[in-house]
Length: 178
Image 1 (cartoon, helix red, strand yellow):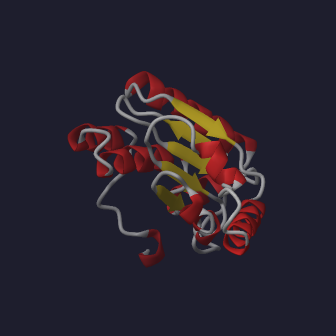
Image 2: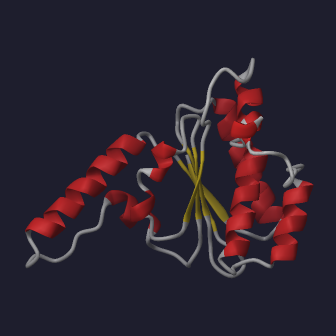
């Protein structure tokens, strides 16, 4: 799922793959409302049915652009989808490894932050797994706020306050070190 959010200045995007449970999708929609209501950051949620297919399409477009330099440059489907609108960020979250959303990062017209479950066997439930690997709705929202601040699109103090309000502990050790 992709959530594109626009800051009062320009916008960010948030994503998670459709293999995420329906509850996670509802959590994202709830966080979309938090971004819009509490932080005045408009947001969209989009589904990503296959990072692999988006990557495959982008590679094919790159190949065509390379082999036919006289033709007008084409853009990948992913690039076209995210190109309209103001500046912003993309947060791509997956219940799989970060490498999956990172596989399409170079074709994102906006800076992309990838979140993923880089490990296994750490949790009894999917909810606990998402919290452990920081790919739950609170961490996705925090990533959007942090990314907007990093890009100069949101006041860092406002982003830090929002992250704390989401219940995200910035001092918590990285998941792969716990």
